[in-house]
Length: 258
Image 1 (spheres, rainbow, N blue to C red):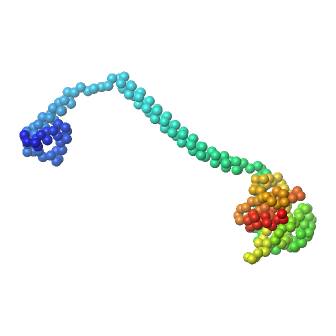
Image 2 (tube, helix red, strand yellow; image 1 turned 135 degrees about the horizontal axis):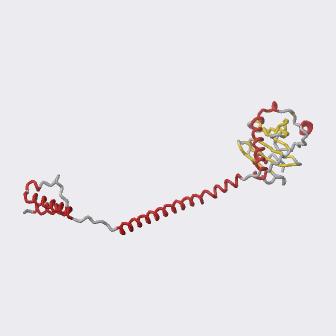
Image 3 (cartoon, one colour; image 1 turned 120 degrees about the horizontal axis):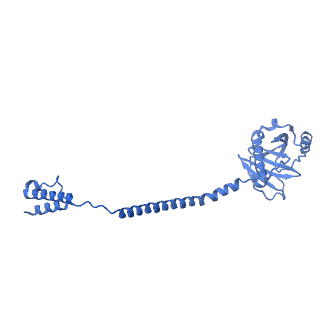
């Protein structure tokens, strides 16, 4: 028996024989018979070996342990999900609270914003029409004041605005109430820039939700800036004044006397 026989029989015993690549048994009758005897012995042992069955208590213990492991894994997964939800909640709640607080306006503040929206819409629609959009065309403040006093019984006073020229006015409406609408022009290198001044009786507007502009002779002023239109609001002698123009806040503020 040469070394090839030893290697082949070792492979047979270990179950490592590759019949497709090992041609040794084709030329060695002894090794071929050894392999056949080994296979027959293995088959006989498998047939004669008793079939082991685990006792009932072992199966019950294994089943109970598996159930406990499943429950533990489910609890761990649930806790991970709960922690994840709690983490997201901690991130979202402050933002949601901030949004809620920001939106928790009073009825008066909502009315003030709605009035501002009307002022902006009127400015965008009529301010650039020029003289044809006016009902009174004059640079005389007293004539404009008489016009509104007689037409809508409103004691609107024409304020002294710096660097602008009064050109006239017309009656306007903000919601269901009449309003005096005064038109001004600010001359510059690129032509005339229109400005509108609305004067009206308040109807429950609360302007405190709008940013305050300081330094205007102690008068309470606010502003709103949207659609490229700045609106500066103040109250005087029981009436509300709202100056609108396609200007920045500092430019609007510079028009009012200190």
